[in-house]
Amino acid sequence: MDNDEIRVFRVSSQAFDPTLLRLRDLIDIADATNLDPLDMGEVLEGRSGSPSDRVRAVAGFAWVIARRDEPDLTFEDVLDGRVITEGNVSDSQSPLEAETIS
Image 1: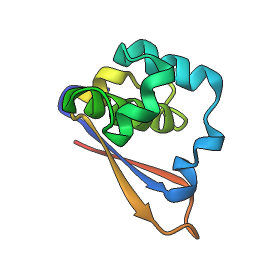
Image 2: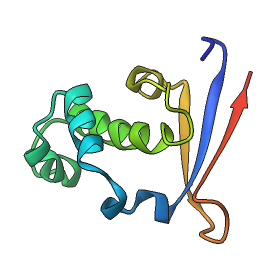
Image 3: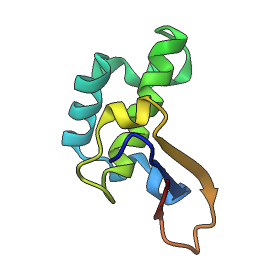
Image 4: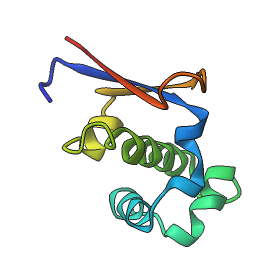
């Protein structure tokens, strides 16, 4: 992805279904965020970790969902804001739509 491009992923609620995450996804999130996968639920709920831990965890989930459409996408692309995920897309639409903005 070019540095001047922003990739927008429109994600329906079904794409965020945690039962669709694979073990490899969780391991990749843990590796990218330096968070223990066993603590990730508590971090996301705000019961442990710092605000930056929560931001990294959410970015990790956005990354593994968005890379389903673009396998070469990196965690840094999401964390640096070159990737935007938009939730609340109607479930009648495709669970994941992507668009590149130059």
